[in-house]
Length: 415
Image (tube, rainbow, N blue to C red; front, side, top):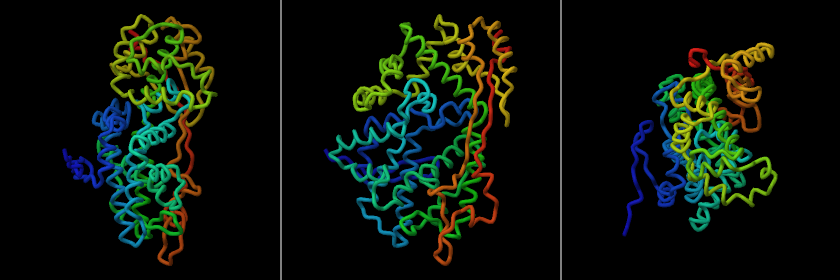
């Protein structure tokens, strides 16, 4: 039976998105990609911005749409991109997030330690390549930055890639933080290639300035919002406690694939060859999604372990801890005093209090001055980095900012 694979999708951000390739359609239909429908793009940010419930599935399709626009724009300027290269770079951006798990950063810090989403994305692309008769070879080559046309990789992963171009617009749209809106259409129209490097024509410089400022605002207003930070850390502690109890031989409710991760002792396996356990890890990983984690936490909120139950209930019912932010490190004596006070209130020991009173840092710099810097193509065909071409001072954006945070329960929540 013939199937029409040239579908048109209606996206709330970009409107109609056309699928121009049978391979793209088949990859989207694959269970690995369909899983992204069940992975929220912004994790627990919906606890701050109620509308931020969009998924990595939508984001990947949006990035694909922007990639097609970028290819067409570059080709119109005489940049040679063959049909095979266009499809390969489109596949690369479509699959760039396929290795993301539920609540990615929380998962990577707890039950999937030692294997980040970039590694998993590449491994899943390799698996798909085998299933699709090696049709992803060129896409993987571009994804790994091993293809001779380096600007194609920059479209997938750089400081001005289609990934960032989509997530800024999409996250701004769904969170309602209008300051994050970027002029992606204009930026894409201003793209060019010089010396095999992706550049922006001079008349697009204001759009790039707006892009960098919007990214800065989105990081501090959305991605690193203090309530998101405390919620993610509480989720990390829930998963840590679940793993700790599981390693002690205490059986917890969880889907079999989540159970597998809870039972892995990465202290013993992390030095082994990844190939030895890759197949089993991947087969369990591709089954994991947000509903698995949240359903488990909902059950754990009634567990007889008071720590797991307290933290799980706090996540489910949004009883989040208090968080303080500071430009300077918090006084250790104050932290110790809080731990002593809450140890008595919660009846927990010296080890267990770390689940409730904790401090750390967040570090971010929006733009890095390195070999991957955003480059402006001047009218005389010379190329200049954006920080030198811009009339505004971008030092605040390129400066690495570190903030300290301290979290502890609100006493009213203990009553």
